[in-house]
Image (cartoon, rainbow, N blue to C red; front, side):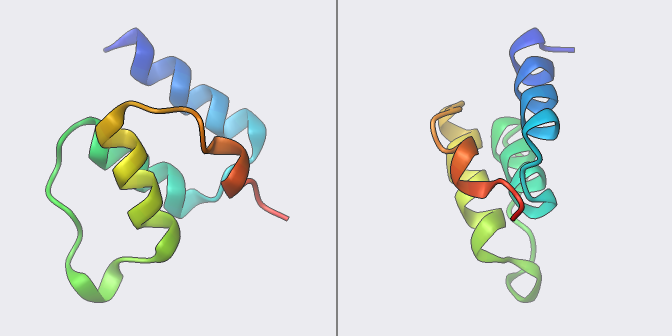
Length: 65
């Protein structure tokens, strides 16, 4: 397991990020294919883009209210 990946996912979970964002970030980080169009949400897309960049900068924008 990649330590960067593990630490980022743990951080998102502890912060209370939206599940869709976390799933998108994981898929982007791991370079998995994007979900089929009807299942893609704004949070998933944002997470996917951040995951591809391996960025943690936007985690706070996706914390559950």
